[in-house]
Length: 202
Image 1: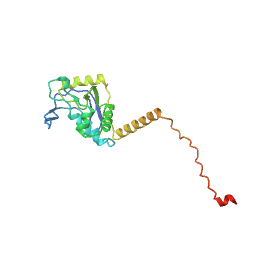
Image 2 (image 1 turned 30 degrees about the horizontal axis):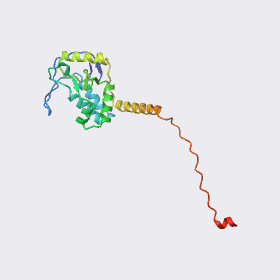
Image 3 (image 1 turned 180 degrees about the vertical axis):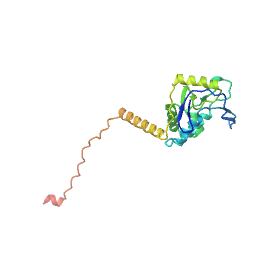
Image 4 (image 1 turned 60 degrees about the vertical axis):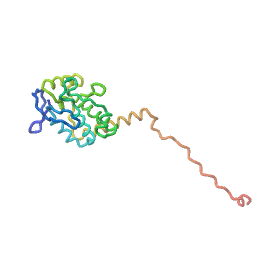
């Protein structure tokens, strides 16, 4: 796990922690919310420092975390997120373009991964809630699918990521379209001056 010590140094290690409750209660949708996370502090530290990240992405990520399935008996449901981009648009009141871009960003870190249609897994090293044994199991699933590495983005990372994507999209569009050549147009001829009848008789 990655944590930050008192001096701000980053420490990487694996550890198991017996149930440390982060939050509990019942929300407006009558869904039970409870569990613990190990590295939530560093995740929110990154989000709080992400100056170039649109505020809509912060809203999107918070909504994703709130949708983790907790306190259910079905093991496959716990720690996962059942949602879709259309569902997130409705819940957050955001456009399809914003949700799509934000999801792509968080998947590029990767802080989330698609499991199957309508089901996602958030990075257990940063977000998972459950017992120590469950955390170890979900982390093993994550590492098998994604690997051991993920990014803790700096303040400018989101902006740089957006710029690179826009540049790549523009380059791809230009490659598919007509060559970027300015067509030559023949100059328009000036209209002939009409000679007066008297001048023609002279």
